[in-house]
Image (cartoon, rainbow over all chains, first blue to last red; front, side, top):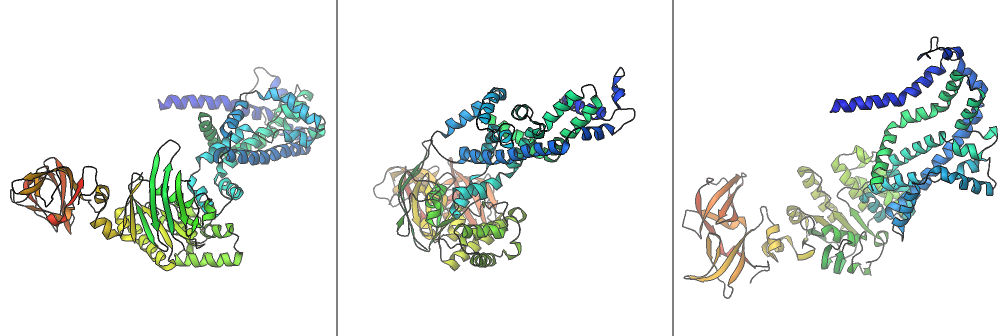
Length: 270
Length: 354
């Protein structure tokens, strides 16, 4: 029983990681190596030349800065909005609370694609196209983040909150000084998820930005792809560079990411 | 310091469960009152209503001269110690104890001094900079006490603060809480389900059962003159024997028949269903047919200073507490003596019969 499960999980992890490993492998090959048949799995003579070339061809500093600004701002913004809304839904009493929360949940069923046009029209109306505010503003609230934070606030014991009330803490102090620190694991999880999501964000930046100056990682990578469409090792080197931060975040924050999926899993069951 | 008065306090929870029924209680200024009851009896609900964490459905909470029924917890100037301690896990002991002072906007220098005083009183000086997770269970409970006493509130509420501790530590901290009460002469309401703790700590004990206040009195009063059969059963280890019986006029005057026992009583009027209470220390054993009835010995528990003998009195359980090591064999049949002056009679509903 256990071994079947292990075998299944093993196969799955190979299937998931194989493309990434092959991406790294190809990025280390010479340009002509991939023209042979069958294509080789490993480079004959590993070279870092592609990396040097990819770094030279892309305005990496600018692209990384743009992506970091987007991912960083959205990360902070989503943590703040999700924590505040999640706290309100979990611990405050107000009319229509559960109805409003259900409406929020319902929006999760809408495909994100559906909202791209309205979002663009809004951003365009305030003249923010091709600017940082345009890139960032509509990403600042995440329903999934609110669900995650609500659930983690619901799971906190009441005692500490009540002790703080008796100690004389007001609603804001209670949220900021007591509940938010208690929910720190969920906050870290949410921050990591938001960061990773934004680092990989492609569609929205593609639509709302135009100039090369505003390009984020995924958009730059796509442009790189169309410029060097034949040169796979070259493209794979650029792809490795662009995904590197996400890999690092994944490695470091593994524990928190797993926990986040567990919490939202519990939340969806309500 | 202040007195606490509850007037006709009732609480019905959202699901329709009535936790408290018209509770009237006066806690005197500076008194240590123990609220005692089995789990689910409503004692924590009483405490939460006084603290303002729960709003009573009807009735009033008065602290000092002020009606505070609908005030927020912060406005009531009460402190509470939770069973779970409820310390802020990411703050040091020092910051935990300082938190209520900070919330009340006390000047930093003054707060620092008060925190140190409190820590010294509780023996926490050496662990002030540790986090709660780095403390022993006893130190954590002391820190929780410290956070409660540091701002000198009018009333202290303690919700089974020692229930989680092991026995030696519990006894040690029990003495400390008593010393603390004497030192600061505070009004304290102490919730517990442990009757021994209630007896040793309470100046008065209020006994709750199923959301109703059954009796309020000194430890001696509730032990010697229980207001009903629930209170009678609750006190003592083991508690009072309560036998289901029937009063009847016999050849030699009135008797109560309970299981295999026939006990003569001086009871003028009562006939019918009765509950007969007798504490284990007033049950004695004798030769067969020499007492008020014969019983079978089920279990013998020698405890050194005393021996508990569990008996079967015609289908009803009866416990005798005998001094020292008693020579009683399991499975034998023996006679029972009772001290007739120590009998308690209750009617079928549990109210005392004079």
